[in-house]
Length: 391
Image (cartoon, rainbow, N blue to C red; front, side, top):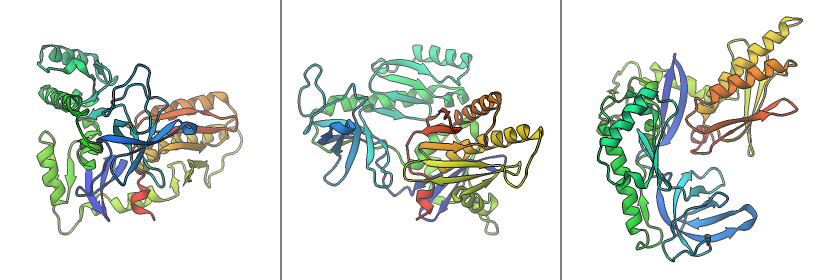
């Protein structure tokens, strides 16, 4: 994992076989982000037409709260009657789950969660669940450990054990993280009725630290940076990781890993495939459109079916990779090369779905339309890569 300073942001790049597996641009550590913060916000307006509400988190900033899935919530300025819902003037505990994108306000949720390197703690619910990627042996070991460990209050909240614990031999770091989350939520429960509006109950750690924690430990061996401030910060936070400070006056770290070349590719419209085909990627206001082309190579006769399938399968892998690198979200429409055989379309969709499942951001393959357009949705979490580098 390589971290370099590019323009006014930090660029985190994870490399796999000399190609970026993903890239993330994050604000410089001294810049504040509200993503993940928990506030006592005031409901200013409820809009039935969109089944949502607009809330203030301070005297200047507003956020949007979808109401379609709101079941449980905390209100600080009044007692709730059975079956009663949120109304204008309420002071509601919310968490920022999506950054402001373009002209849209930041998105909030009443489902409070704390995400760490080894577990996720949810305020609503109770019990333990485990990542499906954990081995049965590891799951059994962790379950036995937690049954014998002392973590007062653990059963009051829902904990999900993340894949990163697969790399632990001693589970004390997991237990300490769980205790920290319990303490945070206990303090929230005890105080939210007595705090003034706009109180911030929880400041999430810096975006860079959060992004690193969300990367599986199995995907990289070390973190390398040539920024002294970043190196010192990472060393103080990640005592269990290999952090290396790169120094070479003759060859900059960004040159060593061809960061600028990969960045230009990630910001460009055309991506070439090994077979000679290429993708054309066009982000629009409403959605991201990706067109798959066969390129200069033409295949005729019986071999055309195999060739078009080959292009589409290579394109499927690259589409999933480009979504990770560019951090696109919302609706994505992919126009693959038309194939007549139903078996070939089924194979394409299965392979594409498998590639999309590698993404840590929730990504779903919806279907292929009657016109042969493949529909994908990807959760909006943070700004796309292009927002940091393109006007």
